[in-house]
Each structure stands twice: as C-alpha cells, then as structure tokens.
Length: 337
Image (cartoon, rainbow, N blue to C red):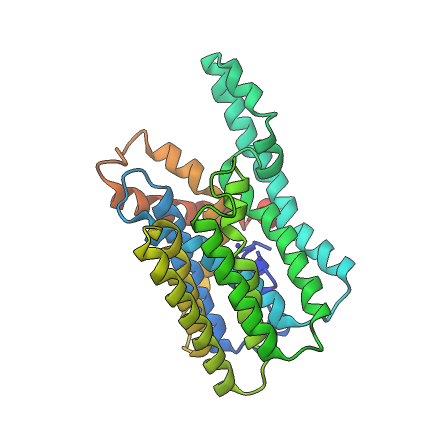
C-alpha cells in the first residue's frame, strides 16, 4: 500500500506512512485542503479494501483489491505533483526513513513470528523459507512487498519528473496514461508475465500504477482547475475503456481494481470536499492498518471462522488494527506505523 502512505503518501508519503495529517506547508500547493480530505477518505477505503481482499471467504475480492492501486496511485501522484524541489539524495533519504525502515522492522516482527511457529511445530522447511528469494525481495510476509516497491518506484517517478519538467504537461500526461493502460493490459493478458514468482507478480501488477500515478500527479501541476478536471476525466475515460475490454475478455480480477482505483483517485482530485474529525483521526492510521492486519487477522481466527463470517472478520480486523496502530503512535515505535 508513500501507504506512511499518507505521510508517505501525502507527505510524499507513508511517516507513518499512512499517517496523520501532515503540516500544511508540506503539501504541494496544487493539492487543496478539500482534495486532501478526499484523499484521506480514499486511504481509509483502501485500507478496508486490502483487509477485505485478504479475508478468507470474502466475496468480490477484486473490488477490495482496488485498495492497492489506490494507495499506489495516490503515492505516485503526490510525488509528481510536488515537482523537482529537492535533491535526489534528500528525496531518497526521506523515503528510506518512511518506507524501508518500517519494512525492516516489520520484516523482523513477522520473521520472529514465523520462526516461533516453525520451532513449535518442528517445521524445518518453514525455517528454510525464511532465506528464500521471496523473503529477501518482499520481506517475511508477502504483503510487505509494497514498501520496497514503493521506495524504488517512487525514486523513479521523482527522477523522471525532473527529466520531463520542461516538456508539455499535456503531452506527458497523455503518453504516461497510454503507457499505464498498455502495461495493465500486458500484465492482465500474460504478456508481461503475470505468473511470475512472488513478489515479482505483485511488482508486475503494480507497474501500471507508476505511469498512471505520474500522469495524475502532472495533472495537478496544470494552473487551470478546469483543465485539470478535463485531463483527469480523460485519464479515467481511457482506463475505463481499456478495463472494459479486459473485462469482456475475462480479465476482471486484474482490470476491475485498476478501473475503480483510477476513477476514484481522479474524482478525488477533481472535486473538493470538506473534511471532518473522523476522517482526520482515522486516515493517519491506515498505513499501520495495512502493516498490522495480518497479525490481527491471524489472531481472530482463533475466535471467528472467517470463511463463515467474513464481514465480521473484516470489520473487527480493521478496527482492532486501527486501535493497535493508535496505541503504537503513543510509543517510540510510532515511526514504524
């Protein structure tokens, strides 16, 4: 799911990564308070969606999986909307602190949990898996793949944004949108290698979000609000058209999440809406919810049969993960959520 996505995302994202409202001065001038409130709402929905997708027995998981591209599109768009205002080294250092440091911490946490489980069950193979290529690339739990991916991809967006700063925004936006739509189609149809080992398959799925998020972010740098809306509408229209074709071809599980995510993110930036206390309090917890929910979900299995009560499992997992995240924000561990 920068999933402190907001901090990283909104600060250029996940200090918490999906954090609490950052200082106004840290926000790009092109992103109004109303737009930030909309993005905060999307982050909350995205966190719920990710939990929904990971919940055993939950129906229509492809809808919940839209949470992942929402996180990615917001993260990349915020980087692009900031412009090239700092050195690459400083940008990389900030992203390292907000993404890779939490990744290392939670990889340790999940790794210790896996080792404890393997030792209690005398499962030697499970312990060997801790040294697999998958663990080295993604972390000790597969959902952690998002953090190193966001770090590397965010750095790429930052560099490309600088290279293209003198090129017409409209040209950059249209080319990036077409590249993003083509990348999604290539991955969905298997041309890009959708059946690769983990986390390469996840990385492949996230590739389309890089140019699409870049295109959306560049829309926000256009001075005219009306022109911004037109360009955001064009991006949405292209993606709806491509995803509709993919749906007809039978690739709905991959197309539906991106279709929903692109339309929602573009709409959030196009129209402003006032925030409220609930959104302001919950949005900063979304990164922590993303990071912690597998642990909470595993614990709940002892009390709830997720396959029989998926809705209850989703609600409890989200709420308990939010509570755990809030508690961690009051401790020295707050930098990891």
